[in-house]
Amino acid sequence: MGTTPLMTEPSALTDLTARQLLSGYRAGTFSPLEATRAVLARIEEVQPRLNAFVRVDTEPALAQARAATERWRAGEPRGLLDGVPVSVKDTLLQAGGPTLKGSNTTHEKGSWDVDSPAVARLREHGAVLIGKTTTPEFGWQGVTDSPRTGITRNPSDPARTSGGSSGGSAAAVAAGAGPLSLGTDGGGSIRIPASFCGVFGLKPTYGRVPLHPASPFGTLSHVGPLARDAADAALLLDVISGADPRDPTALEPPARSYAEALAEDAAAGVKGLRIAYSPSFGGQVAVHPEVAAAVRTAVTRLADLGAHVEEADPDFADPIDAFNALWNAGAARLVEQLSSDTRQLLDPGLRAIAARGARLSALDLLAAQEARIELGRRMARFHQRYDLLATPTLPITAFEAGRAAPRSSRPHRWTGWTPFTYPFNLTQQPAATVPVGADANGLPVGLQLIAARYGERTVLRASAALAGRPGS
Image 1 (cartoon, rainbow, N blue to C red):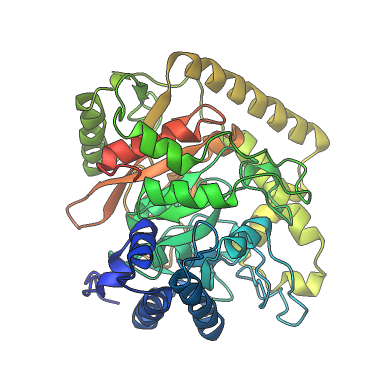
Image 2: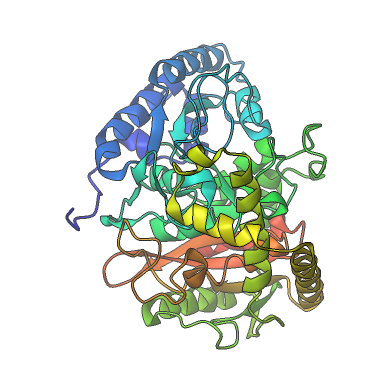
């Protein structure tokens, strides 16, 4: 595999954001059918090199696009995303085809007639569902490699990983294979690949987007958008937020549309926001110099735009033991339900963490929950002083495809190189990654912005200001 970036010139339609597509539909400049055909052609072009899709639903997508085209021509669009091509991570149920979850233990046969809540909302709002994107087996790790679908690669350099576990979604958006995608994030699984691939990714507050069936990793896992920018993510978040009777932890929708609030906030930008900048969690994390420089430049820009920025570290030590206990216990519960013969089909890495999880006691899990609660308390106190915490999303840029961790990582597991992301799954706070440049090899760098629980509006506001794109 060479190192030439997959940056062939896409058609104009595959370059557009969801908002730009909707504007074009409204003006009659082009149609949902034309946009969908362009995206499907782009998928056909990039799929052999990236492996971002489990399946592409060509005929159903074209049928949905034709119907959306007729609605726009009649002046009667349906919902907020009518005719916009959207992909869905293959851990989320989508009626009409199997949800394989990257696993050889999943059988394709069955009725497959249920949508997860977020997918159902996409249908209600007229989105064109173009296909399912790749995931590691059951979303268990930070790269998108699985026994069932193989390796998903990075559009900036196909010799590098896309990250994970929503790596197919991030790669698709980065490559122009649809402007929006639904992902999940249990320890960074939206933010990791979004950072590696140079797109915007948001993990909302836990419960903001309902989930059914529940994740095997419990209340660590959030559903959220991957997009080209914060304004598109706000639009998608408006569609997928809100309560669902199948998820008793789901929150009621916010009082104000995120897209409308972002447009309202555009004039002020970040003026007056109090931002804590933690470059290395108080020296706990070794950050690559090129990543550190790009992030520092972005933080300086936030200050130049009017934010009150000071260097300050959150008051906690690495919560890896608590995270691993909860994560590994989820894996153990997942594997426990499989027969001994079926377990042999699993990714060996997943089997290994499941075995560790099976050895945990009830007291171990209670200790992990206590540590989680204490971490949440500390971050709640931190956000009494600061509106946002800014960190690198990751301490590195994308490494060699086909590996679970860079060669230098110690420990040699995905959590060894993601120390900035998983703490905020424990606290269930909203956190986003914003592209802020590239290293000397052209590999994207991400800045992470974290707000207090329910603070998605603040995260989106700062993300949009940093990118210089108002929410219009």
